[in-house]
Length: 341
Image (cartoon, rainbow, N blue to C red; front, top):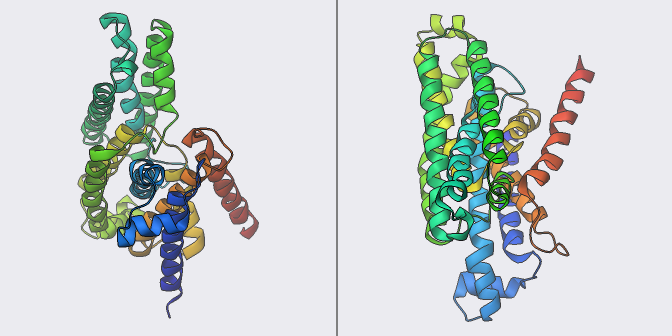
């Protein structure tokens, strides 16, 4: 059997195992029998187990599954376009645009309207999600417009970083003039969470990602050509500027949707492409693209399991756990490459 196929099967089996563990394990333990009866044969279980599994654990596991895949694919696309190992989903400032959109809605709601958005329940959540999408897409539109004017990827990368700094500066000013309760709500949103989406919103998010993720597979040939360099890709008949724009749009939409629903989640998009290149020993996107999707889902499920580890009251911030898991992965891969040379 092909070595890559064996690895794919192992990752897929680990995803299934981790998904089940995500449903079972948390601050309250749910027995496997209850999970099995609830999901497979429809037998009645205790009301507490039913509510925990159906209203909390399964939505979190599903969101982590698709969000991790989307962030990983976006990171791979950014690293390929810029040929930079430190590029990630947030490199073009699209996550910063989402944060800026949420900042305007959350931090100004109490100052101008006199009512903190965090008190408005589902209406506040919808407003924050909408603001994040609008902010992300606005920055993405700006980046796409700029990409039509500039030739080099490095210039575009610098512009994206500057947009991120500018958004951070505006957010800092808004924080200074905002009530403490609004600032706290914004900070909590910025920590990232797979638990923020539930009910109908969760299924909408999963369906959107279920459409967007398979579409990324259509870019395999384009990404392989871009990996060769702009001049070589151009000689092979690729319109480099148009291809770069399409990849930016595809990656940007993924980041915008995920950030809107889950908040800015770091390190998964940066770490997973490196991890997949190390495991699969290839740069071919025909293998890397599906591999990053699966591995991103796997790593997100691991992080979601750790934030709800038994004995911890509530849940840890997702970004704290993704950094603890992702940073050593990137560092170890960089060191291993240094030893080879």
